[in-house]
Length: 476
Image 1 (spheres, one colour):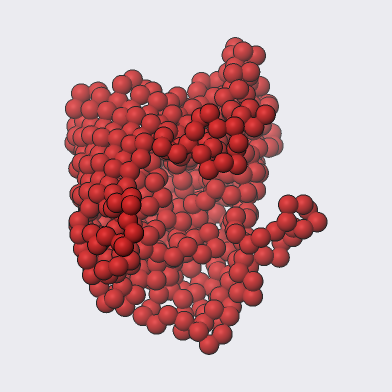
Image 2: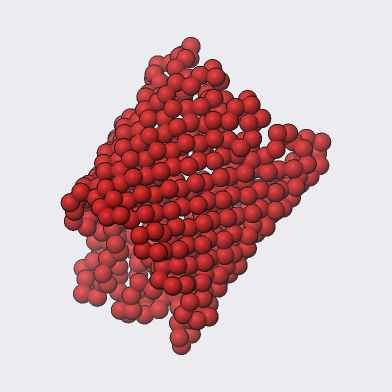
């Protein structure tokens, strides 16, 4: 019985395929990058380019998509200190083989009404996950994540109203503040062909215990988010997206916090050159969190600039990201660390999230603290990276990525500022539309700020680390 629960997405796909084959719309396009659920993360169900909104008008039917990744990674160390602990049977290196399956199903209940389901079987390590394990509570059981389960559709004679409700990937126009899987409900209205406005509200999962039954659950100690946004399409791919979002967090008993966050994303495309600008401001208050028991005023910001140059067969990309930090005095009446989703457009592999697979160990997370569903850098964080790629034939695309990072407030990093320099070589291969592979080699030369925030024994050691990874993805 438990094994059948694990295989639910695959069995459901097989059962539906026979009855719906004749009326199944064209499958979703291949997306080999894990965790990149929404290819336009600034849209979150509001933009016409969203992959679920308006995929077809073929009436009732079933639409399938699937991604399968097999990966391997090996890293020379987990920090920048070669000092061996007194008890160290596992050594300093880290690495694993892993498999991830991401099936998606869209049920088209009507021409303008859909149910979407996405799950992720993984990240399953070959050395840990046992496919013969019958006890789903055992540590060796396969990992199963229910990613998205929502209904959405268009309303009105002109399809100029729409909604989405359920578990979904939700982001603000920049993705720097909100970039979460959560339960939410949204309503949008297409004012004309170029302007769409929307309203969304949801809850961020938190660790504050509540019971298993409705009698033991309430809204007392939860995290709520919501916002108003507008998307204005300009010429060609040019777009302005802006919104005002709010957060109320009472997950820490006796320490509620709230903030208001205006956010804006501007994108321009001039053919050979394209780029975008992102900005978020956070203003609010956190009660009873100062060292003297008083309140703290929240005033934080984030900014990002991205540019692409297409000189086929060559391509260049530049990205600069900055997240504000707190001032040099912890526990005073000011909190300046930006509440971050830990998502950005940076292409670095170890300084920020690896786009081929999120291993959840990127340096920007390890240097931050996690609170109420968000990552906060007391020392601030800034990273700039340059990517140079070349298309060779139809199936080979090598790329070089160079990136550097620093903190903005050295007082939170033992008075050090430099975080590190990263160099990556990404050899990308593609055969047809469904098979992709990447072989990536990386070197990270850490600075003393990274050592101060990551090392556990010698806080001044800056031993370089290297990483090798490979992934083979199949999908449609």
